[in-house]
Amino acid sequence: MAVEQTDRLVIWGEEVELCGFRPADLDELFVWFAGSIELARATAMPSIRIHLLRSSQPSVVASLRSIARHRGGISGVKYFLDGSRFDQTPQHRDVEVVLESPTLCCYLVDGALLTTSREAALVVAPEVPRMLLADLIENWLLWRAREAGAVMAHGSGWLREGRVEMLVGPSGVGKTSELFRQMEDGAEFFSNDRIALRLHDGALVARNFPQPVNVGCGTIRELELDLPTFELDDYCKVRLMPGEVLERWTPAYEHWHPVEAIYAPSLEELEENIYWDGDPDHPFWNAALRPRVLTEKPQLLQAVERILAVGERGTPIRITG
Image 1: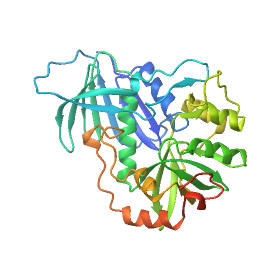
Image 2: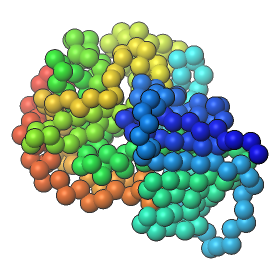
Image 3: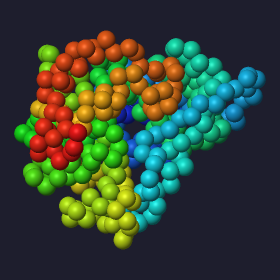
Image 4: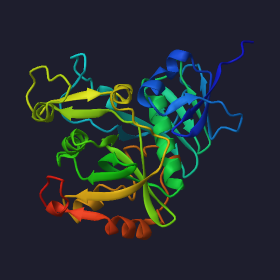
């Protein structure tokens, strides 16, 4: 009987054990978590084990219902650095619910049967569906962060002397443009989309999470960035994958940094773009990993409000209230 391949990886500081996967199955993890993934050196117990059983999907007798699951960035037209168009089809899929409970769930996902708890997951499929492993681990990492008292903000951020300044708001408010303006003025790249916030000794600290960066062609032209536009209109975007982000701007994902300032167009948009409750479709489609009620919210809000600048008060942020 052949011995199954077992791999240990550290992803965003968490140790993951993967059993039964081929090296090619793990390639997407090194693409999506570039800069925050490495082979595990420690011998400590893994935080989660994921096992692949290569088999045809077993018969499931149940009244199934579908839930929509999506990854971020599913709107707009985007092109990669090589000029090829970004296919957004894998960004969205329907998941069939076989069983859901607070701690154990079973789903059908693109022909695979997935059974998952908070500490382990079993995938039954002849081959691993594209993006299933990355989705499962992303969901689990963000759930772990939430369990530790962190909340995710939808914002861009930059570093000055080791301290984070960030702009929080909805898509279209100018987060990416402001990030690159600040970098033109000497700041370091921190994050373009997702920032974890938590309290440390009563003060707000932030940590970035590996994500693609989508830069509008209008921003590229306005700021004369060293990125191609392929003669596309201003509303099309160029998409850099996490490895390309790492190569160009060398973000470090393992540290928590003190937060110097938070800017937002309005208090309402700030509240809407800090994920206090979590989106059940993105990324918390796995009900076994739904985030807990954030008991730290009042203290986090107070810490945010102490360093918050809204609208035009947030100079040099060029946004309007």
